[in-house]
Length: 248
Ligand code: PGA
Image 1 (cartoon, rainbow, N blue to C red):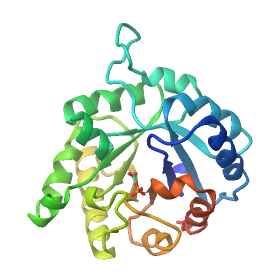
Image 2 (image 1 turned 90 degrees about the vertical axis):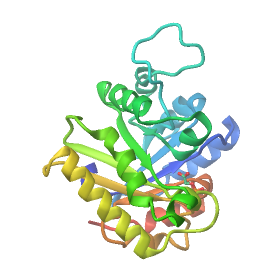
Image 3 (image 1 turned 60 degrees about the horizontal axis):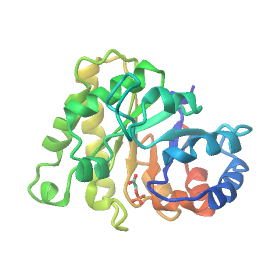
């Protein structure tokens, strides 16, 4: 069932503290969101707090990354997919552009993270997107196509991908409806050719989604949801975005 709703997922990035989170999570827990799947990606230290405070809601909790190492061991600072799962999380963002930019994450490492997430039954949400320079050079589909090759050979029935043009993240600049529609159609086609015609796909758009533009974005063909950064830190804004999720 979750694979046939629109997904509205929040990405807190490196924000929050126990006191502020508690207020926000209690507000989120009251939101009516039966028509959509709602998720929150918190920093690692707050996973258990979020799972606990959302336990009477249907909102799912996830992390923003996981280790590429599968087994426990001497990997100082790393957090395994198994640990994330153990905290009650249900999904993990993989390859967010900030991870690609600041930590130089590329397909080889990202594939290990995807495999680790799947091995412990976490839903990986693969984030893809081009930079401004790449779009200006008309390389956006080539870039996203290459990022999607990380899925080659995966054996899955369902896959979730977030298209986040890097130039639209945190900038207030949203891709146009035409740009979003073209890229989402391209991503769907690519995934079907990589994973087979029977795979169920969720493609989320991310990049400056807010209460005012959510309705337009969520009604674009093949936009199956939104990945929301800044606006997910405010209950009112996030709730308004959720209210605009379409029933598919
Ligand atoms: P933004 O971030 O909504 O603040 O642009 C989106 C994201 O990075 O997932």
